[in-house]
Image (cartoon, rainbow, N blue to C red; front, side, top):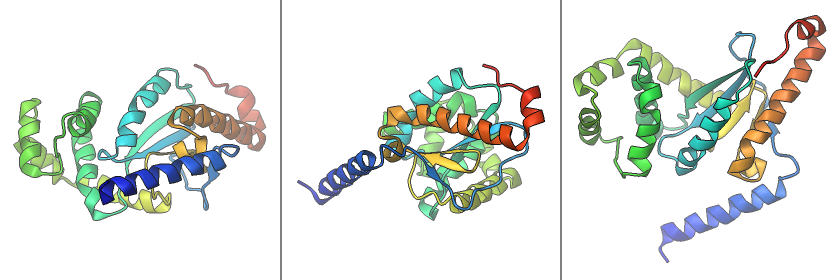
Amino acid sequence: MSVRKALFLLSTLFACSLGSAWSQVPYALLQPPQPVEDTGKIEVTEFFWYGCPHCYHLEGAINNWLKTKPADVVFRRVPAYPSDSWGDMAKLFYTIEAMGLLDQYHSKIFDAIHKDGVNLANKKIRDAWLSKNGIDPAKYAEVEKSFTVATKVARARQLTLAYKVDSVPRIFVNGKYYTAAELAGSPERIFPVVDELIAMVRKEQAAAHPAQAMATKPRK
């Protein structure tokens, strides 16, 4: 057994033991809580990394949950950026977003990396993949260097630090609560826990603003 394989098995066993130990408390409180955008909606934020296989496998659950997401909830993705080695994937996410192609290519990027074994962190390989998928590499390079992308990548770094993200995927609800597979007990339990946290936030908001809560009810 290789050292890499041994470390992988140990980390898997450790994660499983954490999930078992913490299954009765499927979420945690972020300290200090972080401010969210003032949209009047409950904010659910996923921190992810394109290179993470667990993030890749969670995509199906995310897409299924989005189909029934309540109207008073907004969902955001943030490419985690805890170190320089993750920066290229953050740039990829925000460049594709700035080009208006995120909905079309987000899943394809995951597939390219985890299904097809394409190293999109390598510029030459990435440019070939872009061309193959109908995206002009020259245009991509132009947008990647834009102020908009640079600002969003820097913001992703700030958020990763502020939210104390040290593993992915991790899901936060309204900048206050968070959950993950090791907290929820399994990847399949993540979004049922998210729904529970959304309900908790609604109750907190209703208690703080009773008049507003009576006037506004969540709709499917």
